[in-house]
Length: 142
Image (cartoon, rainbow, N blue to C red):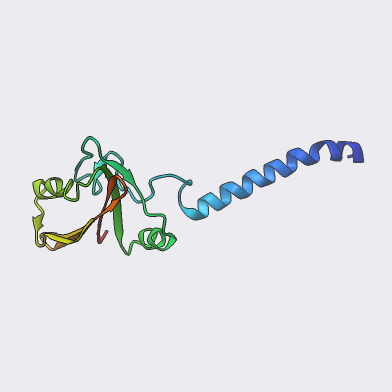
């Protein structure tokens, strides 16, 4: 190869190397950025327990430690956002699926928590007001 041909191919080689490094990094992260890594089965609540109700938007925590715990199989979390202050929006979904509500606590203005049980399968349900919406988190063992 001559110096002129190397100069011509260098930008292409650099771009391919950058693309390969980005793909490798995304592979280490487990999923592509922005993907709903915490949602077990898209379009459902709690890994297929029930279809996602209208007006409920899934999202995942930004915390890297949560992501690592889920990846290692130590815990599971799913998050959902609903418009307005609707802290109990997904409670009927859980109870219809056979979960018994153990607690029902309005902690303070804009915060709610509950625990649910179904044959020893315990879930923690928390809701927090965030501006004009409610962020609901459901967590438990995988």
